[in-house]
Length: 248
Ligand code: PGA
Image 1: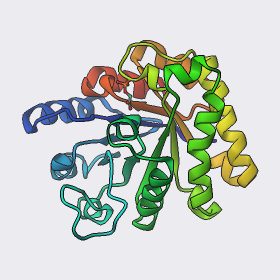
Image 2: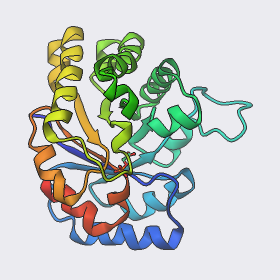
Image 3: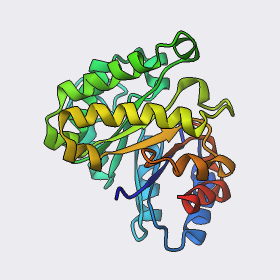
């Protein structure tokens, strides 16, 4: 059985004061969560997360890393720096990075490798746009995105990644993929993993992301290949994030 993971993606939101309220709210009612829980936060708040979460079962991480180890890359954050703040996770290849920063699938794969080489778990995001879905290209687009990662990683490394299927048209729009639509893509992704290694394929978590909310989480999370959620908007409200955790 794969243990589910509910990961928050705060995106470019937060302040020291607001984060304290949010994290304390989550901690207060987390109880004995039967799933893994993490928050991926803007880099300046990693120290705050470490201070607030170190004594809890909640993990933390960042939303991107540089593909480079260190050096003259102004504005970038190195994977090794995240380790200084005891991060466990880093999101790579979020559609907002692919779109606004022109990140290619090959670059995303190299970032995943950089994370793994730094003992971080990469949450590798894939997903199609509305135009691509309507053109019947979902499997091709998502397949190409994941193939780049499969080409860059050996099976031992593959076993350590998390994949997040996030249809771009569902992100922040309130439009969620139906459980059946999401399951179809998750099953396709699982089949690709099976082609690499059937044992590894059974263990890799594939999260769904895109307007997952308390009122749709339960049915999405009930699908056989949906192993958790990457939660944007709903991760910014303690009550909503907790409701999704409890649904898992
Ligand atoms: P959303 O974002 O839950 O606000 O749709 C998900 C994500 O982009 O990771």
